[in-house]
Length: 214
Image (cartoon, rainbow, N blue to C red; front, top):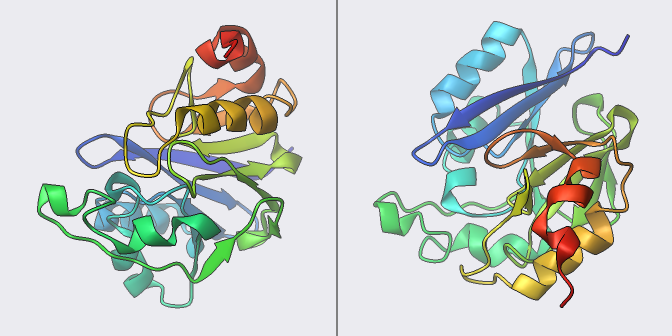
């Protein structure tokens, strides 16, 4: 039986899904999209008796990054991962919308990852899938051994990310979903940036992208 675990914590004013992912035997964790409420996220890590070793960012919007600095301060050795084309969004509060809510936030990743790259944070083998569309530097993280996809704001339950923000592109997000995510095994569990868990198989049948003929 696998000791792989995912815990979900909706945080911030938009209820962004922050994930703490770990193996029980290793007691090392990675945190996905810590969008706010850093002390709560850190407290949950303590309750789980895990040590965060990495932060994975799917993209740079404020509701996915606001607690990054607080968590990094608590664990200075941890590595922050983000897509190579997301530097501008992460760095510019006016573009990542943190300035709009009166909490300007500018961050930099420790490591910018590329499409097809393999990383191994906290002992969890993870494949990087570049999925431009919601933002130019959006990425998804595929944990093949566990049949898990972290989809950020690219793919939702029977929906997809909006593309009317800076660097968004509707044709690109459709291409990303159909060309890179839909080919994954149908039983792959999809953990999105907002809302409920779904599967690739379900989305291939019910997501509007599957019906798009443009």
